[in-house]
Image (cartoon, rainbow, N blue to C red):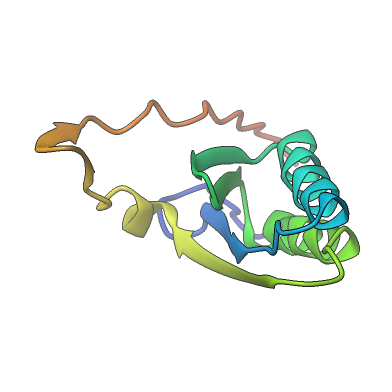
Length: 115
């Protein structure tokens, strides 16, 4: 059985970046539902139209990409971008002129099977 160690190059971060119309009440409902669907799928709001989710592998990320596609609103632009954990760790965030410390990464559970 191949060694499937979790490392900074296999763990992925999936970003959903979007610009949705909110001119009419119906458009606002679609935009709100889309944001809520992202939250329900484990995404965290990074900025108002930027949500991010930790994925333990490329395969897990593919599952979430399919889910996001399933609840796309009828209008607007939605983009999905992914980074490895290593790349994500290099993000520099600013709040005004103050650098924000990175949030603690989710803990990983590794199971070892002795065949």
